[in-house]
Amino acid sequence: MSGSTHSEAPHQPVFVGSVKEELDALFPKYPTKQACLLPALWMVQEARGWISPQAIAEVGAVLGLTPAYVRGVATFYTMYHLHPVGRHFIQVCGTSPCHLCGSDDVLKAILLETGCGELGATSTDGRFTVAEVE
Image 1: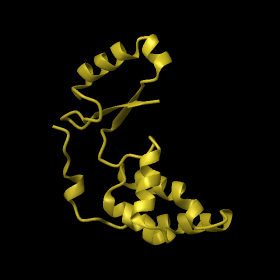
Image 2: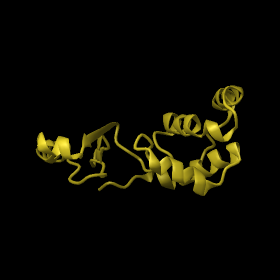
Image 3: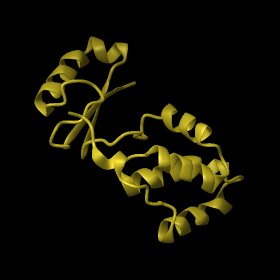
Image 4: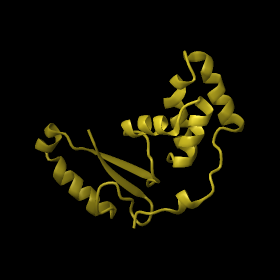
């Protein structure tokens, strides 16, 4: 069971109070607000543990970007989580050189030991999420 009730809770804005002040302090350091997109996404993830569709819309609104643009950038980078993840986020290399060194066996062992069962799933106790990355 990899589902979570996090996505069912009402969205609480991230960019309020000190987090908003932190983002506002970045604006003069970048040529445009759009250039603050990666740090803004990181702030959301630090605050919430993942980046929900509602948070994507909030980031877009704060930076003057469409949610589709924000999502496109967030999905490009493996460091951003677009669904709730376990407390321990384990990433296993899936490239050809790693495969030749036995990464498939490592991945199978990790999936078994964590109880995740498959890539992208979170263990039922919420402790682990395993993903394959390059």
